[in-house]
Amino acid sequence: MGNLLKVLTCTELDQGPNFFLDFENAQPTDCEREVWNQVNAVLQESESILSDLQAYKGAGQEIRDAIQNPNDIHLQEKAWNSVCPLVVRLKRFYEFSLRLEKALQSLLESLTAPHIENEVNNEMANRMSLFYAEATPMLKTLSNATTSFVSDNKTLPIENTTDCLSTMASVCKVMLETPEYRSRFTSEDTLMFCMRVMVGVIILYDHVHPVGAFCKTSKMDMKGCIKVLKEQPPDSVEGLLNALRFTTKHLNDESTSKQIRTMLQ
Image 1 (tube, one colour):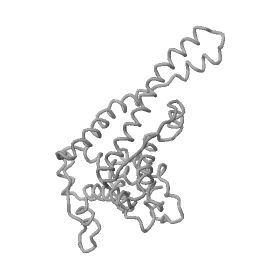
Image 2 (cartoon, rainbow, N blue to C red):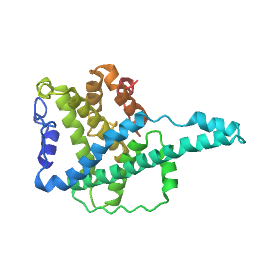
Image 3 (cartoon, rainbow, N blue to C red):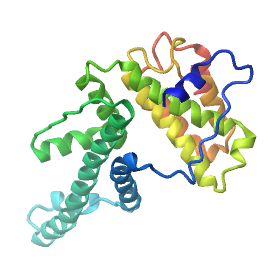
Image 4 (tube, rainbow, N blue to C red):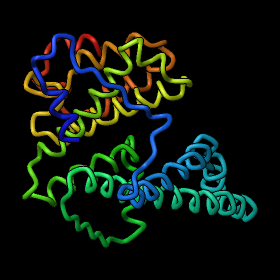
């Protein structure tokens, strides 16, 4: 990581950093295996979680019918039988977010090597209510986990975390904008993976860094990252652009240049 940071921050390279990370064939080393297994298990589960979320219909009609007809036992039972399985699914989604949070903190620990203590003991139902009150609960979980990681490790310079995030964004941007590197990937899914990672770490950086990702002193090349996204088919990146528009913290700060705001309009 240290050598990669040196490459990315070097000002003597005429044509920018020259590197390629083979995401499709990368394998963990023995010392990385434990964290890799933990994160991989969460990522594997995320596929079924996402499918379940996409199929989630709710029970709005059944609930409305029961409310409008409080004396109809049949409608009351129908609403109850519809809601109970949904509560189980919502609990599963929430518990997945907790595993996602722990996996991210383990990953950050392995990258920055501090000692992490994160014990949270609150009543499950209250936490679930707060979780689902967020517009983007999973993203909020990741942002909170990263912010907590920084605040819980006060002896660790915040730059250790923000440099790690900006490095990942720069790696993805360079590989997306360099035809030679793009051509090495065998799947379009890998390109989408790079774009999602780039946007995700930008959002995390913006929530963790005191002045965010959009100011002039930021180590994030926001203009370059947005340009890379805008060069892709609109249908494939609109959700990612919306994530930058609506889930970042500092986009509307006075320190954000008008050019960046215009690019995200």
